[in-house]
Length: 267
Image (tube, rainbow, N blue to C red):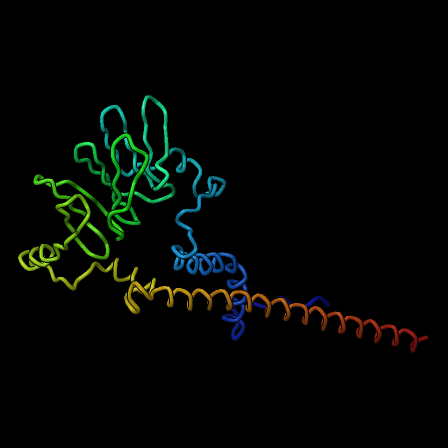
């Protein structure tokens, strides 16, 4: 007689049955989430931000990856400077060249002061002279934007230092944190308040618990736990399945032996 399959609606097998099969079905997604979380926590040390890979074969990309995602553009003379997630490019008469110093760097903004350009990038503030290939880093801080004020000073919004300003072309920077405080005080906004969406994100990444510098610890622990539970769960299921098949085989052999013995006794 074949073994009767378990009824998922019959206690106490219900939770165990769902846990087992959902764990098997979700094994790959959990592994992807866990491994990629750990990699993202160490993306700078591993150099992942500079590595380019072909990913248009994935079903979630396709048409969306056609072309280059432009973040900012400035024209100086007959040359266009195009800032993208993959670096800074120059375009002149249909000919495109890459600024080597910013290859693979995510750019956010561009500003022009005469024949000098300033770029806000994930790695900081960079500058270069129009028509020249050499670019150098002025400020090492993740930057969101950069602009030239009416008095010629350079202002940049950064993640770590807030608004910073330079009156000497980027040689020295001073913080204008007081501006944010004044806005918060006079607008009635609580300077310690953040959006619920940001709080949920920071709890998810561990930043709200360990801070930006140590959020990798939270990600490593939770990611490693997910990898261990996913792999160990699959191994336990596989071993239990093999054990059940072995016992079922022994039971069938025993039944066959008993049937054969009964047949001989009846003769």
